[in-house]
Image (cartoon, rainbow, N blue to C red):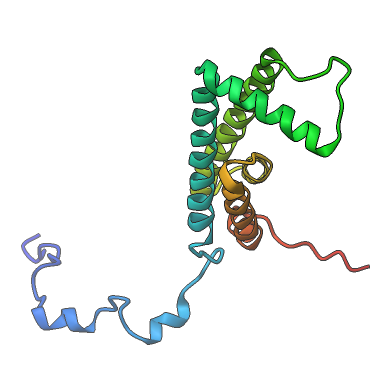
Length: 181
């Protein structure tokens, strides 16, 4: 038992020059060993930003409609302008002219429509950033497109987001399927 030697310690006999022989992964040769699971681009982030902008435009439009609804003079002015436009186009209504109550109902409906579209655009933007739930992303893009917004800016931003979303489909884990027969 006197001939037993203690187990070798890893730190004994190790020289600092041996670190140079280790593969730290920084060599140019190791670049060929890289495995990429799916291509990653910045298109989902750009699409999410476009949807976020569209959502804010829709929200500002809803706030503008709420401001018009809360002011009686603006509602009366909208009623007069609507009646003038109806007369210029030669359209007639059974009751004669539009009244303030009808204009308020239309503005209230437009307000809720814009709010729902804004919420869907924001939700689609979040899902784009997370690269999750492709269907909600498409719904958010569609809501941004059909939610008219000021000067149709939300429609343009939603269409741009939809274009980028279609291009980044593989990043959601959806592969292009071969439909050739």
